[in-house]
Length: 451
Image (tube, rainbow, N blue to C red; front, side, top):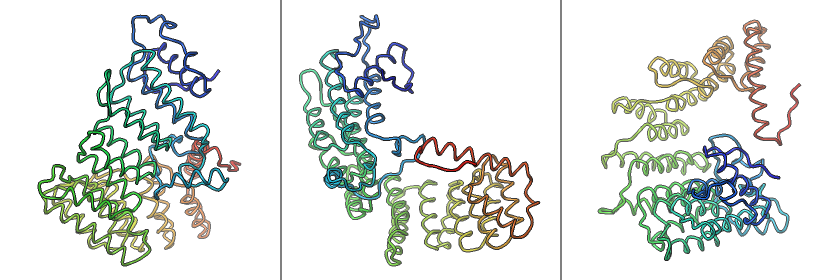
């Protein structure tokens, strides 16, 4: 019999057993009548199905049925790489039917298991309500809608929202502004930006009023795939005089970061200049409106200026941060370090690294040291590169495999391998091997000769 993995939320042992057996019934496509009732647990007077237990079951369905071991969502990491293009669900379905190559989030999905998960999720949602007199609330409605979003079945998604927004004798309207905002964000993360925009415009149909958070999530979803005209249109609505949802600091930061992030992807100098100009224009407009930029806003603009070789403007923003008492962090200094290392001004990069440590504006990490080490090896200053590697290891970090090999090859060419201590080399190599083993656990398709 299937045994579900240990649940993250702490429940009682009896509740955990019940949730595990219900999840097993879903995965094995068994009817829920075979799952134990509360009386099997000797809890006749206690309501076993609560909002938290129902949410836990609904969250387990996408984890076990929607994703393969190669999917990004199964990896134990905080990073999530969303698609950079608007997905076409009809085209993906046709490709699957014809056996063509599918790229993106649906590449390693099994449509049969996805359909099973969606059917069993809806069946469980209504089964709990009819057999146990469970009253669904906003949280359970939101989780069920998120399951439909992750399954990419928009027809079921819209029908479910219509049903939940109508209410009835036993329940009120469960579709709220907070629910729609979370769904807009989830649709954007799935690459379904047009559907996210449709959800935004259909909020009034579900008797919800868009707030600034809904606008921000819609703008962010549009910017993710490069729909800047539509994003600016929503921003123009918010910026109208007397509008009930005026833009805030996050709205400006989303647009500024998106313009800077996608500036270099255009491949056209004119388009790059235009987008960087738009980012600086929004920043000045933000100051004119009386908003106070935070460190994230400054970091986005400084990084964009450094990547487009506008170091003068980046330094102006850096000085402005100190004048406004906005403390820079490691991300701020890393932008300058990458720029100075790329343009072969290594001494300036080392100065920024020392400044970060002396002022206590952050703890240098591998991303701070790596550009400087690479640049030092290119100009033949191998001794200084070794010193930085030692400093990096003493700080508790392990250099990347490519960086370590680059320094070793530079030392071999100059006949200075004695600069590397044997104990230090063994420590670095063991750290690199441990990192590779962890990656192989996350990505079982990777193959590497560990000998």
